Length: 227
Length: 224
Image (cartoon, rainbow over all chains, first blue to last red; front, side, top):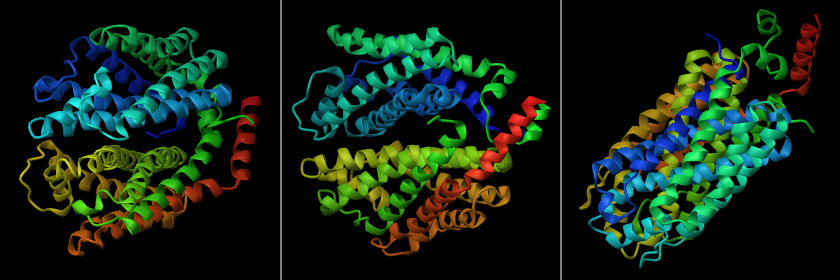
């Protein structure tokens, strides 16, 4: 089987779906961001899923953007870059939650408290340096990136409009979640997860014919004839 | 300017160059993995470069793979995925080295020692649990991924074949680091970094004429 850019982009749809399912699905069962949680097996399972989710999202956003790169213009490009930066840094935070916090929970409880405090809004006693401003960068890129890629996707009219609107709205309402108690805040991830599942599904399920006619690629003329 | 898939793939060339060169620079300037290094400016710069290797390397490698995906077959796909996992996992380690180790050097030196011991192969009083296993896994990911992707690049005949050879040889040399003194070990990264930069250059410098003629061919075919 030969791989073309189209095949890769279609597969990235599956990746977006997987990431979206994890993002929306783990929220109701996510353990509380507190010291006692980090050494539980539920924490290990959920955070492992989150690590996979970050990688799925990085691939998924690349596919969503590549599919409509020609039509999405600079707005779409900027949105894609911001989202990539956001999820790339998020991967680092999740790595720390998964591999570092459980190991140091006994020896450095103050550090774990402070690290969790970044997410749960209760700053710990320890100064943990550049981690706090870096987490703010994750948030700003998440919000702006989702908004821009959502708008660009609506305007490009290559993928369906409704999940694109949902992507933009879900990104923008996230800061509003700060008004809710922390336990409820994480539910703001659910609309974003649904938007990713929806966009991923539309990438995956697109007819091959429609794809090859409006996305000329590096395929050879013989591929085109075969289509 | 319109952004097409071709121009995106071509633009990923410079990102691969940046990723490859930063990896080579990490190799050249990496300070020894000892507690005293962690709070130095060199440590910070080298590990920020290492984060750059991951992000630019991921984007660049994706473009390189997309360019010859069709010709490089399963070998190329497996190599690409293994290298991608390697870059993603390495990112986690460098993230800790940039943001966490310097902050902990004075308050939790035992933890920092244990972390560095993982790379140096020295035992420590703190058990890092799954972390050491994950670190051990990165070796085979890097070596196998590089060898497979290098061979696939050589066979695909789309990008520079010799860059593919250098990638395969450069990553295969990884285990030799164990025979070098500690301060020379990181230098083993240099050939692989240069290979990635070379592949990126090869992608970037491909004649536009080639893709333009392919497009004309497509348009003629669609007109029929």
